[in-house]
Amino acid sequence: MQTLLSNIVSIPVDDPVAFTFFTGYMAMFAAAVFFFFERSRVKGKWKTSLLVSGLITGIAAVHYYYMRDYYTATGENPTALRYIDWTLTVPLMCVEFYLLTKPAGAKPALMWKLIAASVLMLVAGYYGEAFTDGSTGHSVTWGVISTIGYVYILYTAWFGEVKTLSEQSNNPTVTRGIRTLAWFVLVGWAIYPIGYMCMPGGWLNTGLGWESTNVDLFYNIADAINKIGFGLVVYNIAVSEGYADEKPAVA
Image (cartoon, rainbow, N blue to C red):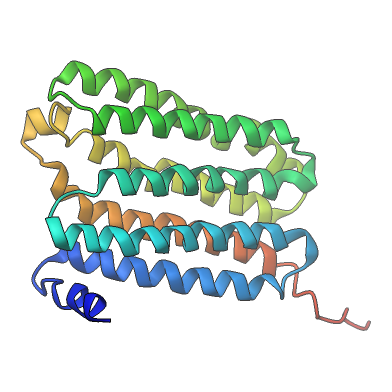
């Protein structure tokens, strides 16, 4: 108990990064509770999607709890913890694309291709950031490899198989939902390569002098928006068809 109180007291009131670590943790935890409870209310074909949404935010909440403590104790970017979180949650976010398009005929191969692309993106990004020697060559090489995975996911969501299947679903809510998730990938995920380029040797670091520790604020806000937002889009699709316990309307 004393350790817990010490961690809470040590959060500086004038440090916005520490503040977003704490609020990010609470927001992710609250979202996970919401998705897990709502899972029992939606119709059967959407239950797994809500379960995955709860897992995404629940896993993130656990990691943010530890990242908050790490940051308040050291004042440093919790790179390893953040990438562990992303390696678990980003593939699950890709799984959501498969689950939403499965009723339209999506095959497991689509899911595995998206997962493989996300793992490539994250492993290359981690190697480039955690093992940087401060040179631009190292940063760019691993950044380009990471970008290959990102571009594949982006292309699949906007122009490829995911887009095609969403249109074949004959469900306007699913089509709009997939497009919203694609916007999350295009705009919301853009903060992550920006942060990568702020590390020593990165283009924004060498060109503009941006430090990676300053990006934690934006990482935390983007994580909350992207992960909770993904879940809320899925939830909106699920409830658009009504709840499991609703009785059909009588003509």
